[in-house]
Amino acid sequence: MTDTLDQSSGLHAENEGYQQSLGRRQVQMIAIGGAIGTGLFLGTGSRLQSTGPALVLSYAFVGLVAYFLMRALGELVLHRPTSGAFVSYMREFFGEKAAYVTGWMYWLNWALTGIAELSAVGVYVKHWLPDMPSWLTVLIALAVVLAVNLLSAKAFGEFEFWASILKVGAIVVFLVVGLVLVVGRFDIGGHRAGFDNLWSNPGGFWPASGDYHWWGPILVMSGVVFAYAAIEMVGVAAGEMSDPKREVPKAVNSVIFRIGVFYCGSLLLLVSMLPTDQYNGDTSPFVRVFGALGWNWMGDVIQAVLIVAAMSSLNSGLYSTGRVLRSLGMSKQAPPFTTRMSGSGVPWAGIIMTSVVYVFGAVLNAVDPDAFETALEAAALGVIFTWATIFLCQLRLRRLSDSGVIPASPFRMPGSPWTSYFGLAFLAFVIVGMAISGWQSSPEFWHKTNFIVVVFGIPIIAALLVGGWFIAKPKVLAHTGGRIGPVWDTKG
Image (tube, rainbow, N blue to C red):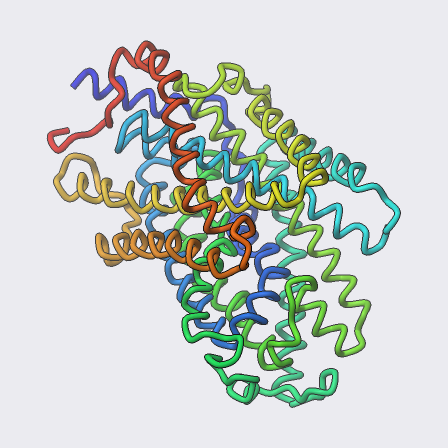
């Protein structure tokens, strides 16, 4: 029992030094902002072109999985709020090795995703300043989000609050304008808007002829899942909320509403306004619609929102990796300097470490975009792994609470364990879907990016993690007194 108490108190130790300064409005906007990003503003264009109107169903289905994920995370957070989030829960329920793998996979995801967002800012800025060097844009963008993160958690929350206000405002304006145009059946660039475009679209609602395949809306779900990446940020922020027991349930329960309105509502209007073959991956579908209306100024506004969305993602990446690295560092699974914190409760060392990687990555992207594209797709594996850990930890928590070993969380996931099993099965499908879509993407083998990432990337990442654990394990054993298993067993 003493060993268990020591380990349990160690879990709470990683929260020391943080300040619970995130208030109600910031938490709600962090939750909303995590569901709105470049995956909606830009990524939907190529998917509409390749899939057709049935993409609405694809986003709705993955949105349901995302809701189950957030309910699973909510049960974990109200069991024990912690800035270590998924790393800390894996340590509690599956042991130190599982925590090590989870932490570094999550860091890999954000490190590579952040590089992409940083590079994207450079591209977006050229819309207004075509002669501005990308390297200068990258440095300015990084300096801004780095300064915000190094100030305090409250500064991070304020940045996300206003970024979310802008993103939500842009979507709301589009929804209002789009609904008026569709209901009024206005002419948009030579095409009459209307809900009948859902089935009169070239190929129909679910295109299955010509360049389309009947499995398109199903297979595209393996890519749609990444549009929802970052909604799990609420879990990381929970350790610095002033009242997580009140705020987390509200944030989680509103996820399904946000997904239904912002994603599915926007997509429904987009396919009702223009044929889906009018969209592409190079231009935001929102910019395309406003351009067809002759409202080029509104297209400029969307371009500005794209910059805000990318900066918001960068901000979230620095925030979360700093805290995850500190959790790893306190358990001797990351370099010792990652545990350092400022007087305002900011794990600045981990944030600086990620920032350095961002700069080198942006250089790599400029030198060899093809090599970086493969690395970016590998980041997708981090998203899948993180989501899987949330479902696994929820299953373990529920099993222990149902056995009376630990108190039940006051915010329990509905339909457990079947909803978590469903989520895990879907994530397995995503891996398979990535391989299949990657194989179909190009006739040239080395351009089948997703296939290469799944078939070669997973074994390579696994080998690196095994090697890293081999190096870290002696320090972890010394730190824990030889106790590297889960905190709880079926007896307590």
